[in-house]
Structure formats: C-alpha cells, structure tokens
Length: 211
Image 1 (cartoon, rainbow, N blue to C red):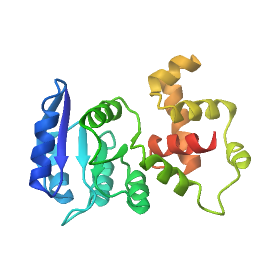
Image 2 (image 1 turned 180 degrees about the vertical axis):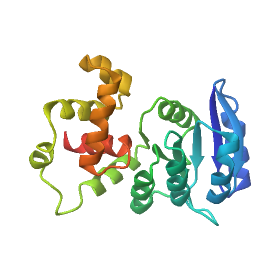
Image 3 (image 1 turned 60 degrees about the vertical axis):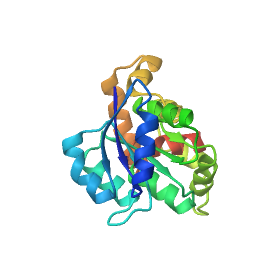
Image 4 (image 1 turned 90 degrees about the horizontal axis):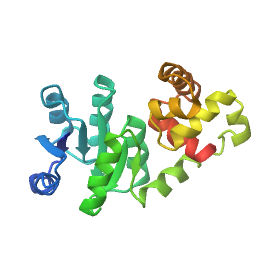
C-alpha cells in the first residue's frame, strides 16, 4: 500500500484528489495539509510514502516545504502537482528535492502511474515539463562541454551515472554491473559530490542531458 499525503490550499482540490486516488487498490490517503508549513508539521505523525505537493500556497509554498521535508526526511518522496508550469517553479522544485512534477490537468491514470513510478524510485516529469527543465539545465553559457564534464568521472562512475539516468535503483545497478549495492552507494556518494548535486534525482537529470 502506498501512503499518500495531499498538500493543496484548495479544499475542493484535496477532496477531489482523495476521492479519485482512493479508488486505486494500492493507494491510501493518510492525511491532508492546506499549506507547506502544515505539511511539515504533520509528516512525522502521518509518515506518508509520497506527498502530492502544490506550488503556490499561503504561509509556506511548495518549494520551501519540499526543501524542509527533504532535509528532515531524505527518503520521503515528493511529487509536485500544480497548475503552474513556469520554468522557475520547475527548476526550483527539482533542486529542492522533488521526485517529479506534474500538472493538475494530467489524466487520473497518468497521475496514478506517476505515483507508482515515484514510489519505485524513478523521476517523473509531465510531457510538457521535461523539455522546459532540460532546456534550463542546458541554458548556462558557462556550462562545461560534455567531454570535459565526463572527464570528471571514472569509467565505472560513468556507467553508474548512465544507469541512474535510466531511472535504475541501486539494486538494479548492482545487478547490471555485477557489483554490490554497497559499492554502488559509495560511487553515487562520490558522483553527487563531484556534481555538487543534492540527490540522485539531480544526478539522473544531469546524466540524461550529458551522457
């Protein structure tokens, strides 16, 4: 069972989402919050697996809440669900540690699939969101050429980065490369340090654009 928490300042939106998602056999709605600060205060009690987080909210917005929650609970997954597709919101949310970004007009089946995908450790971006994010990641004029960036890593680290970019879990990477999960974790720790990345989601996005 995937435990879900809904964070949105509009009561009708939360209620509608709860009604739709409750129809899925593997979803359980464990709680609601009307803004980011309330979500932060409730997570220790509710212990959701995934938080569906709106962006624009009073008191504390979705970006600030995502950052605060991920700092306290690095394992907790946050899927942004909003009506806003501005580039800045997308980049800020992913940099804060969100595992995905979808728009509220996504079909219920797509949302349900995204939740399951995020729960399995994958990054999930809506079809109109991915191009915006990737274009922003490529935008800085002082960005390193791909060849120079790749030279930062050993051959094994590049292999692991490519698999991260494909959404593979540590276990799947270990099985593919015939190494232990502990070795994978050690490599990923070094990769995150070299990239100055907050988490594996940011590393995966880098890999998708540079490898």
